[in-house]
Image (cartoon, rainbow, N blue to C red; front, side, top):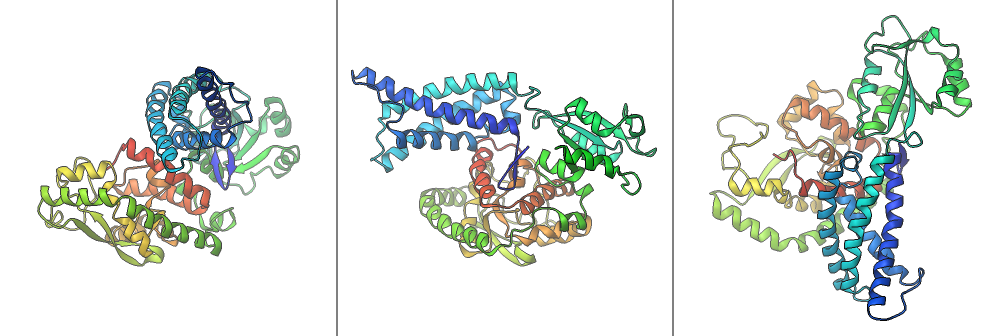
Length: 462
């Protein structure tokens, strides 16, 4: 994993992104040259039309990012990549066409963009096929030795999902008699020297996953490896890098205090975030007004009751506010009891409500909450006070998600869409805490762009 603006990105994905950025530049240059040859003109040199080529690269790259084509699990599935790339090219053509209409000074003919889109699809499909061949190459894989063979080490092992990471575990070293969770391990006392083992196996990282460090942590050996350039990390940090979430089973206040992160209260960052929310919400309200009117009419005509639904939620520092959404359920949906989790194929959801939930249209009125300041565009989803009270008692650190403003979309929504049980809330909290710990404007922008993927492929929406 490579850390960029406090966010972890797989090394293989970063390499792929850089290669494809260069390919996109070559493609648009080739499309321009082809069109010039067709009209019997001298093709442009590599350094002509620079701004136009950069314009094309940025738009197409953002579309690829938004449709999930830089997720390792998607890259490892060539059929999934082909489908998403097809959708991406359609969206990219629309985006380029709109941008050319809005900025007529950009000197790219419509025919050139058509050629470029077709060439981009062919080029990137070839690139993705080659990526599958090289993704598990030893030069890309991170070779890891784990100290420990107990439950903590098992969590480290389970974090290595081959669809989403490039890690090769060389060996697990059993540090004590009580560590029996992982079979076929090597006793630490049986190895000649940890430093020599690291050298012989070309190990790049040592993960400390010992159940009880007192009296078992080989400090001198680890220090020698550290001095020789081997990266040393603990199990909690390793899992955070691998899955983009904090493992609550290994989470404790002391780790939170001494770990890097949780510094998202910087005044400048908060100012930029709030300023961006105000500007973006004002623009989006204007742009989405036709959709808001059509949806309001559809909700009103197809079911009795109000168009909007107000519900009390818990926000920043535990303060409550009324979240605004298009009504997607029948009126008095909870008349027969207290608050209920949303269920899959919930009978309380109306016909129009099912559609606006899948497309996330029901969330658009929350822009008013953002403009008012109760919410931000990006942050943990706000929960109802009833559930917050219950979950705070049962799930450690649950109340810490309220140290930032809740959001319309968030890191948890991109990675774990279900949220209809205590277990789901537990898992989503791990992603929320990752966002809070590693907050940056870059991560906010990344989440906003990738939210398009959730809208296009709304798996798990309730």
